[in-house]
Length: 167
Image 1 (spheres, rainbow, N blue to C red):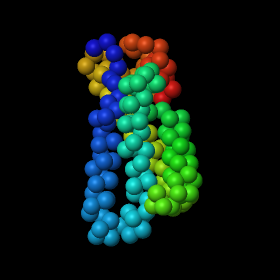
Image 2: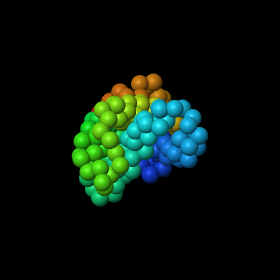
Image 3: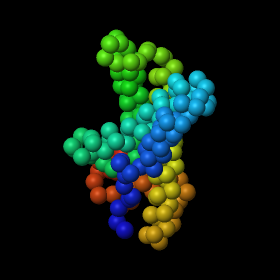
């Protein structure tokens, strides 16, 4: 095996788990008032970036705006949290007839918390994949999944190499 494992944008397990949890929250927790105000107002906001960021980055990869298949980087998480916050908490509440949303600053915090939590999970999964890749290639794993020297072996392009080093 001569390349690192790729991030599966549309099949990302965190994205898929977020979709399932969204459905459970939408059709079970909310109608039965399980979890109170937290499930009513903030669970969807926590799930927003873990659910949508892999899909957005996958589309960016397909159209050539993203040049690598590494997991989302922290700046991408923060950038999209800011974009979602401005869109859903500033712009859309100005049009109440078209969009049934309210401006809640706690939603913006929930976007960021959900995104950062997902980022840690993506890093953990990437480290586990690298350990598995190292074992399959009969190479010793140095234990430091985020070290630049262990991340740079075997990549096909400089963009991918820089992306992994940024993790």
